[in-house]
Image (cartoon, rainbow, N blue to C red; front, side, top):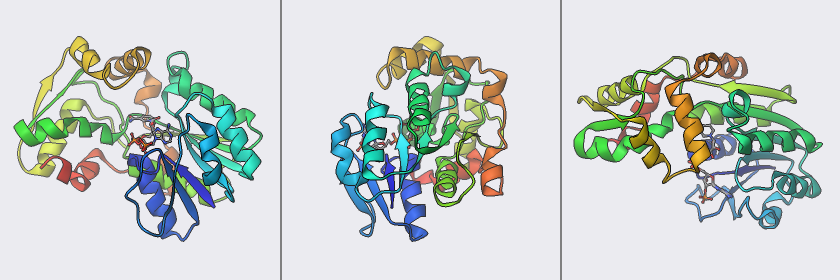
Length: 271
Ligand SMILES: NC(=O)c1ccc[n+]([C@@H]2O[C@H](COP(=O)([O-])OP(=O)(O)OC[C@H]3O[C@@H](n4cnc5c(N)ncnc54)[C@H](OP(=O)(O)O)[C@@H]3O)[C@@H](O)[C@H]2O)c1
């Protein structure tokens, strides 16, 4: 049995669907009640309170782990005690490129490596689904605001992360590997807004935000050091952060999906 934490999120929901479709026994975990297919077992538990995870881990062999809570060692010890033998961590590209800023995912990576469990690390860059932040303004005014409008990054479709996770959880040969997961092309925020407009069949106007405007918004969603590290990537990415990784194709045998494909599949959010 495979435990999927974060099973109601952009990645986890897709992963739960893929595992269920493949006939895998699975337990989906989130803190809140979930609207998942009836055949999916769901347990409400909090990664910040590892004892609550025990019912979810009962009978599990593998764990898809999210970076959440502050004590990955306790989560992993609880999993190992229940019989889990393999863990796939959804980390972050920043754990590799800026470990001093991305301390949380970097600490989870180290805990996973120290756990004695078989492990695989997934390090995605920015998600295509971050464009949901534009959903309201696109619906209301056909506008999308972001800083650093002309800086390109290879954003990844969360469905590709889920497909890689499913392959890694179900197939042999991925132990002790770290996969950098990106999309197939460098795309600027301005180009992403245009792609949403193209999918809608109506132009979406791009509004360039100042760094300070963007930072003020981000501080509602994340702690200060994470906001500053994210802004550093958005404004001045390193060559490693702009590199188009071959790892999605290595694992799946096909190129990653484009942002245009993501926009077309998720058009309902922007109509
Ligand atoms: N967005 C990006 O650009 C980006 C880039 C690199 C890495 N990542 C990583 O990818 C992760 C997943 O992204 P996503 O877009 O799929 O996330 P998401 O859509 O925000 O969903 C998060 C999921 O995790 C659950 N969750 C959150 N905190 C939890 C906790 N303490 N205990 C148990 N479950 C918890 C949520 O459900 P409940 O709220 O009901 O618990 C939900 O199911 C992020 O958390 C981040 O670490 C994101």
